[in-house]
Length: 353
Image (cartoon, rainbow, N blue to C red):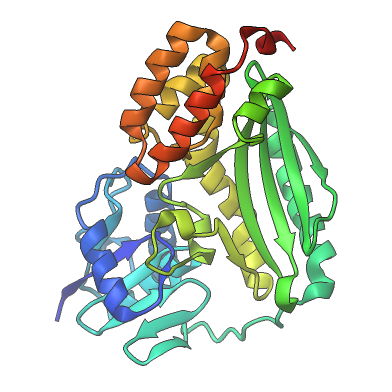
């Protein structure tokens, strides 16, 4: 019997009921073209051929030009096809939702059912590697640093290990642009004896101290992806909205690190870097801030675009505030008005102080 399963890349829901809601949300939702559909097609075909099944049996192979968040794939073919699809997809960071069997197959060998989350036999005979601990952080960071440094430096970033803060040690990429500085920090934490990571991308504008103070002392604007490609495999969706999700997760064993090494650049390349490239000048930032639904990533609501607009002059400031107020959610409008009033009261001489 043939039927359709749904493949997507999104943070892990916490229940099968939430998985069904996610399926309904992602279905037919437009998405930019992703190279990972071609990777998935190649992986499935390679595994099937390695197991003695010729490519010709595939009537409807994965379409690499697919531009929706979820992919409906028909389970029809040799007996081993379902196992191969699950192995191939989850190995690339996808989830596979089988609504007829009431199962959501997740990366790293987990399955979500009505009974909860459990390990599943991926059919490859592999035993999960030993669990990573606090003592493994330096080795994990060294591996990631060696893999990421050449690619970040080729993009014009410097790359270094930052200063420890509480339980975190960051790897930090920085580059100077006309508006100020752009940063990408990958924080490795050992909080509660668990090794985890989080990716924080930001724009740090070069502004006079008085303008920063009038803006509440905030020094950076965060940039986040919309689809979390690559790092979604590590994330958990608790159903409280995107603003509550951490851009990262736990690194339970070496398999997680193996996925993180390429996953970071899936996230950066598809979502973060295009957004940073679109925000190199003050004018760029103001355009992106008032067009929140455009582009693969988003500039999170911040006081700093108002500060940049104020530096541009009274006319630019007044015009930007009207447009920004339209783009902000209702719970952001109060602080925006407070910053607007504080900047209006600021003497123009403060712009050169």
